[in-house]
Image 1: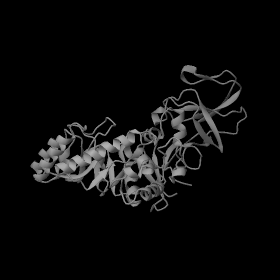
Image 2 (image 1 turned 90 degrees about the vertical axis):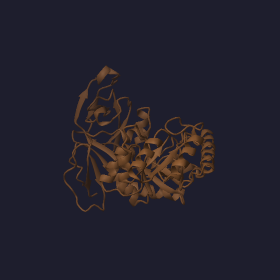
Image 3 (image 1 turned 120 degrees about the horizontal axis):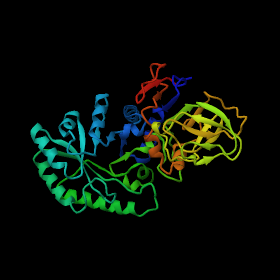
Image 4 (image 1 turned 180 degrees about the vertical axis):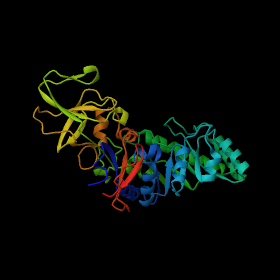
Amino acid sequence: MTSADHLERVALIDPAAIRRNVETIAGYVRPAKVMVAVKADGYGHGAVTAARAAVQGGADWIGVAHLAEAFALRDAGIEAPLLAWLHTPASDFAEAVRRGVDIGISGWELEPVAEVAERMQTPVHVHFKIDTGLGRNGCTAAEWPGLMARAAQLQERGLISVVGIFTHFAVADEPDRRETDEQLEVFRWALQAAEEAGVRPALRHAANTPAALSRPDAHFDMVRVGVGVYGQSPFADRTPAELGLQPAMELRTRVAGVKTVPAGQGISYGLTHRVDRPTALGLIPMGYGDGVPRIAVDAPVRIGGRVYRSVGRVAMDQFVVDLEDPETAVQPGDEVVLFGGDSGLSAADWGAAAQTINYEIITRIGARVPRVVLDPDADVDTDVAAAPGGTAEAGA
């Protein structure tokens, strides 16, 4: 029994799995350091929970997209080195300096950061990003030599301290594609150009989870891993178990209703599905308002040891599964597992049903679904989960 057993819907988060996954990935990449990405609220698992577990598992750095995410981690007492890399002109670089957050720089950010450094009379710790082919943020190859020349000037003046140079891969999850080799070639050129300009970072980092697991030549001084830390495989043809990873989220709810319907009964908005025989339908009280993809078709759930499939469109608060037998034993209140735990169902299964990827499935679970942290090392076994969007700890 856990304190989650009375909840109508819940995402159970296992920090021990996160710790073990970090340890496993670190084993792949040593002696390279490990940065764990906890952006997007720890890929839906809770950023603070994920960051604490990652550090306990041996993470050297924590990474986020936005400075606001980094500040929230500092507020929660996370003291590990932090990098944030996606900014706008409204980003508070001065507060980043005060909070000890390293700043990723793609180009335009350098001058505002230098102004902050001059005003505060302290060097700002920065990581320069080179766009080697992904086409998102990052300095272009054409502008890189000029950026490095300016970086060298500011470094000489004591306004910046260049901690890292990094990039991000586009297709590392498809190991046979040549573009990763091409990106690595550009990255090595960028590192050489930086050195020639007098910029010599302590940390060179490029590898995401798939590259960390499949490209030792991309490990450099540090890898930045995200989805693998949460026990999800980045590869379409390899399971987490095959990679030595354990999913850290179980999504479950309870049957809200059961009824018998005749052949020809239409299901949900648009009547996109009609049953072809008398059957029983189970009502599942989660929908796209909870992060269940509206587009999902024939998606699996486990009820009472059996797997059933969704029928009809997912609505805002609910969806329907065909229980396949008008005399079904399924009853309101029975536990429903969408993925994770011992269900044999995965976020990747739901990704396939929704024409998307496991990353999106775990990240999109909404604030209406409480996160309950299961940890055998917890000091207390709380009986009350956090309010929607929060987390509570529970003894397993």
